[in-house]
Amino acid sequence: MVLAKVDKVSGEALGTGRRKTAVARVRVKAGSGKVTVNDRPIDTYFPDEMQRRQILQTLEAAGKLQGVDVDVRVAGGGQNGQAGAIRMGLARALCSFDSELFPAMRDGHFLTRDSRMKERKKYGLRGARRGTQFSKR
Image 1 (cartoon, rainbow, N blue to C red):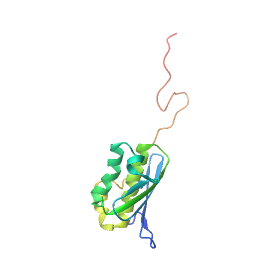
Image 2 (cartoon, rainbow, N blue to C red):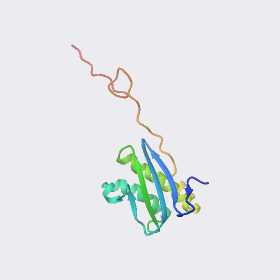
Image 3 (cartoon, one colour):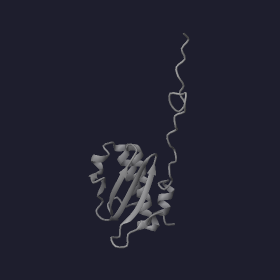
C-alpha cells in the first residue's frame, strides 16, 4: 500500500501528516539519524520530552533511529498537534521509504489519523457547551 511518494532524483521519501489544525510535511532520506523541524534541531523545537518521544517512537518502531535523516516542515496548531502531525507524516514517509515497515507502522497505530477536532462555540453559550452563570438576583 502506497501512502506517500518517493522522489526519484534525490531518493527522499515524502509523507504528510495532520492532527487538529497542524499539517506536517516530512522528508526521509538515508543518513545518520539527524532530525530537524523547521530548520531547527528537534531538541530546541520541542523542549518537552513527551513530544520528542512521541515523534522518535515512530523511528524506534521502524528500527531506523540511526539509519535515516528526517527533515520536517510543520505549520498550524500548537505543539501537541504538531508533534502528532509529524508522527503520522513520518510513519507515512517511512512506509514509502521501505515498504516492509508497513506492518510495524500499522500495528503501532502510527498511520491512523486522529480525527478529534475542537468543538465549535454555540450562540448563547460561553463556549462549546458551557452556559452563562446563573444569577438569583
